[in-house]
Length: 261
Image 1 (cartoon, rainbow, N blue to C red):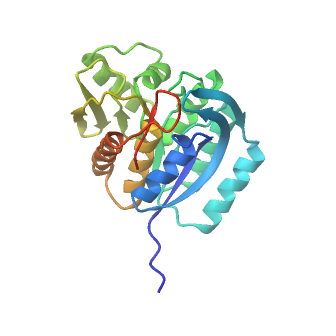
Image 2 (tube, rainbow, N blue to C red):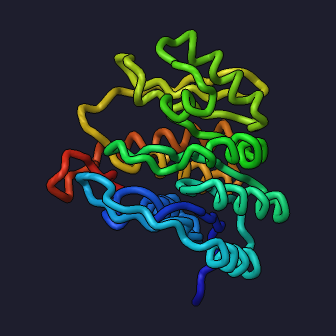
């Protein structure tokens, strides 16, 4: 007998030919968190565990047709955006989200890959700040991304709380400021919303993770699609990523570890 369909989540992001981040990580995460995953591919990268060698932005008409295809057929419970690549794509996605008003929108402002390759052009940052972030239910920047969005350096814990407030002021309803890049003994992720700040602490593992940001944002979207509140979704997602990091492995010749979903 067929089973009832699980909740459904959509990722709008870039494809990672190495299988560790982007659309591939998002769909692995959706499956592991027991939601049906949909995808709209906004960019195609040529990459492996050593780095990114090429990026091709998908033509706007094809991105639009993918959006039409998934929204015309599926009851989408949550949407997550990742690598969008250009200002034009960012504006297209923002316009589509305004029109469709998904129940939940998680925005992961992907700008730079683990290897240091730039994945978002400068004009797109402004488009994201002005058009996409104000629609976000959860915004999930790491520290370098928060610095780029705010135009200032973040170096100590007192800077982080000010940054959280400033990111909320951009229009996002909540912000998860990821602490993996901070010089702190533990990894401290800080979640900001109208209720204040919630800190999530866990041990810093001696590995270089690949796809952690994609996985975290996708896990949040999955939990939102399943009916959890943003605070509960964030707690569950952070715990999931920490477990996946503990099970990570090195599939290629590069130094990065791919999460064990």
